[in-house]
Length: 393
Ligand code: ADP
View 1 (cartoon, helix red, strand yellow):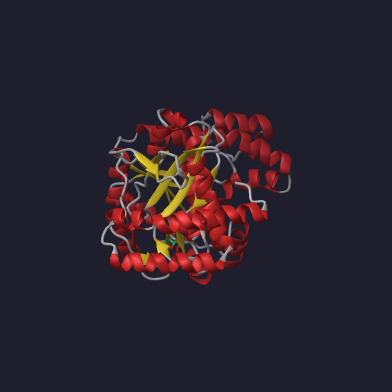
View 2 (spheres, protein in one colour):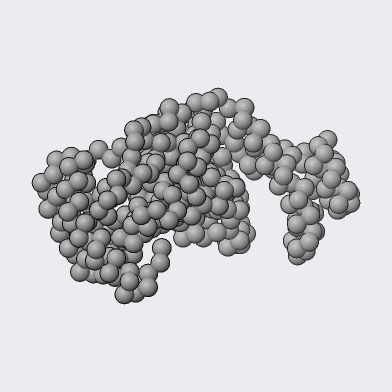
């Protein structure tokens, strides 16, 4: 099952995206709708609200009078919390029920207006954000929902802004064009990303970056890492494991292969097997088949064992290296990164080497072993630097 979070500011086209995804075959779980259902007449939810706020929040028909309830909780923080303690657990439980009822190969899309505000992003395999320029949103809301622009502006101001929503988004669907444009973008997302991503998660298959290709440093790499790390943190919880961005994409300004390297620290390497590996695979980071180790940089070491996971998301290759805390390989990954971040000359030398190799080495295996001699020397320089600066992992 693939879990997709869908959000967007009011009037951005979130519902339009959800309907199109439903047409393609997604199971849409609409949290606005659930929020209404759990307080519908005859529900326990409504009875609790009446018990907490009296019958003044009911309309003449016995249904919840949202305006009256809104007036009660609007300026009263404690009242709002009471209301949320009644509604939120019920919305969560009902959503979980609907998700659990979906088929094992379903693509479940959770349409959640306040996904970013509530901090739900790490609970999904992918977060999709619909984004539209504010004037267009005001126009559409007035035209289709008869919403007064001043009221629409007030609601927009109460939600997260585009920058914050973008930071949580793996995919941004801009919806400034026609509905046909939006549908085409949704269809492409469905076919090129969601379908293969779902199959990969179900079959525990990681995407392998097809070839060595250096690209210019992408300033969004750290942000992409932050989203992946939050997802990994959520997947391994309640274990509170150290997670670091390592490798070339963690060094600002360095051209690199478009693969985000992440190090997950475990107390003992055996902890990486069993339930942890399963949780990571479920979250979209399946283990790569085979045994993995790093080439030792110290004479006398045999090999630096690790576990290696990849990404099931066809559009975001990842290497997730699981290493034991305090081991030489673990330390080296952090030291290399920090040394390259700190020393522009080493960065330039490394870049030169990478460019030469990318031009001459045909495959990934040759590419990584050909870097070994340089790394052996860089290791000594980095260790000297660590002594001089008092560096600690
Ligand atoms: P949200 O669910 O994010 O509040 P909606 O999907 O309901 O937004 O979109 C707001 C209104 O704008 C709806 O009436 C919808 O049909 C309309 N709409 C959405 N996208 C477009 C578009 N690209 N062109 C024209 N109208 C649109």
